[in-house]
Image 1 (tube, rainbow, N blue to C red):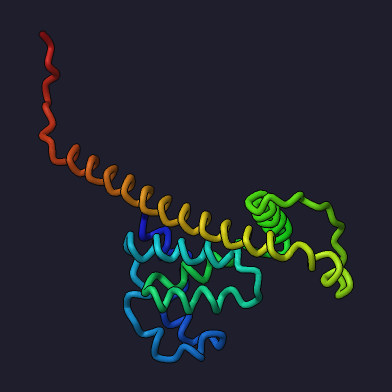
Image 2 (tube, rainbow, N blue to C red):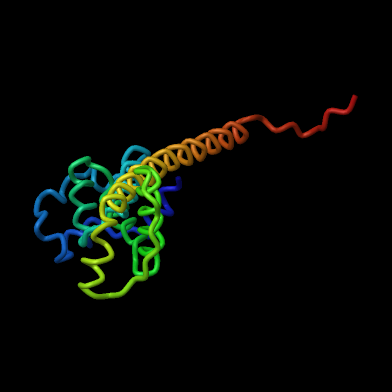
Length: 180
């Protein structure tokens, strides 16, 4: 993966250290591994960011930041990826998670109509929470693993392409074509 692409869109370490949302992390943000752009750091950040996307509790940014610090992977990428879940993407993602959990548990999928109220939360979600949480966990693991493997593979393919280009540049060029 091209480092220039990541560097272009990611905030600098100083910008994140000055962000009031991350003040509680203090000196933990001074670890240079949190800012490196290498295959291990970026693939680990993708795994964490995509895993946390499926955790159905608020403040996913904080969870991603803490996991990135714990595993010493790229902090900005891990935190940025949690924004995959937003008001537009959450309903289909969580519905798929519910379906996956129900299928694994062998439970019939029950149709429901969403209403933004506490009554709906207790009456409709009550009997569905087990397959929902199981599905969220399975989808989190699957998306995290897929992100990890995909970044590793793409990074490797990019590296092989760069090595091939270097090899072609080093070969002497013949000024005369070979005609038999």
